[in-house]
Image 1 (cartoon, helix red, strand yellow):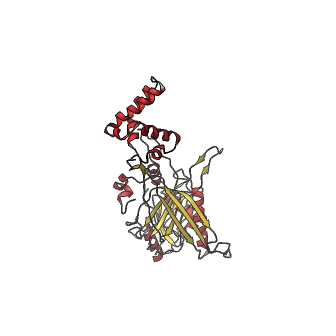
Image 2 (cartoon, one colour):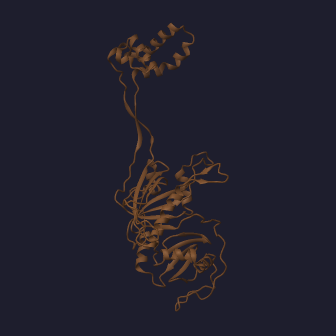
Image 3 (tube, one colour):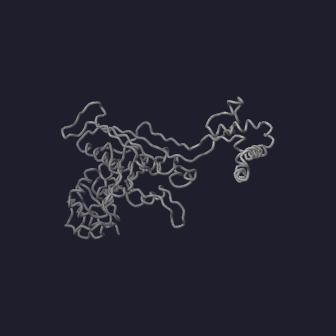
Length: 405
């Protein structure tokens, strides 16, 4: 759709481009709000701010909108009427009056859900601290619906991360912006394990198949003698180091779980110890935050942040409750002051929130404000990446940017 005419909501002037509601500087925007929008990446070159994406009544995604606008959008019918009409591309009866700063006429009926979606149970974009003048780095945690990996039509396995990258390009279920704190770190590890293979095991591996096939046609005594001879043949030049009694003692010890060979000879077989790769490991990221509300609105914001994590990490029960659906997943990003991905901190793949704890009395005593809000909260979060990191990941996408994964 074409860019809409300017219109006024509350104390600001706005336009709608596609489904993005932008505040324009026709009515001056406070510098503190401009700075905050710049820090979060929502300030445009023309001075406008991307406030929110709206897809229809009750279906929205907040971007750089302040809390006052969020509150009005979800509670004031005039806001919904005006924005939903502008989304429909027909706001000829709504115009901006430069002198009065008011809407010149009423608006049409509300649109239906434009993208056939719903925001029931979703969260807006939250942040702590609530009053932030911008210009700071922060951690952004965005929630998305979990999409399992599966075989595609060619029979290739699609990883969970690849599947969830696709859903990321559609719509988030809300996000939380938290300040940077000491202790930001990452730990990369892969699985390597010790492996042992002594001379008798090597020889046994060579003749195991033939020995098993021949034992059935031999008498018990002959079978034992034939097995020992086969082992000596497989040992080659090393056979002179072994007596028949040594071989018998070794395998007898293996049968009963005791080291009879070492007890009887005082020697040990060279284990040919080597470290072998066993597979990748998944990374874990831990964060601890102390929330200290300074006003009622910040108390409510903290409450929403805590509910955001608890709700989205919980499994979903479908009727009639035979199966459980996977919880939602999270994308963690370190954001630089200019609103882009931090160039000198690591990137993180899609994560599951595997642990979340809340301490409602972190100061060691029970204290509340008049409205019942606790004076302090402390949360601890443990995120686990859904996919391991591979060398190829550093060659494309996020892995090729900044510090990589």
